Image 1: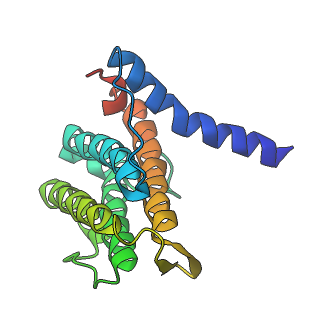
Image 2 (image 1 turned 90 degrees about the vertical axis):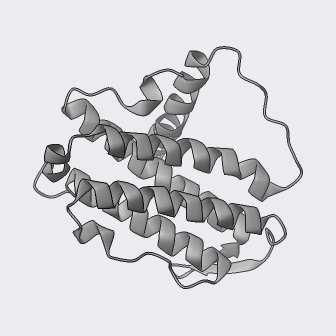
Length: 183
């Protein structure tokens, strides 16, 4: 029973922001299937990564130390974690050394963190472009094995998961998250 509830909660968590965005945008242009999984997945990375970046920009630097409870990351640590994750996951997908310049989860400066998210989003976009010709190649990621397409999906899920965290932090501060702000 708990597994079913968790599954439903996960589906709702991912679908709600996308549905809300589509409703706010009006008549959405249908996505055309390209036959290339990396190209088809790229808009999801851009959407969630873009929302995350806008949220990081929107939250005041004073709120970067905010923790909903003592056991969880501060808002700034969450932003740093996402930048670290993007760099690490996308580097592993392409077999690169991570281009991240720091452990961003330990950085407290908002400008540095926002720049790191922007750079990590751009880096992951280049990996998605590269993946067009490599989507079936094998990848090992955090002790798991799959294809490049699987790993791209893993990265998108990671960004979406932490965007969901960000939404909670922002709502607790009385803020409207980017995915609920309209087009």
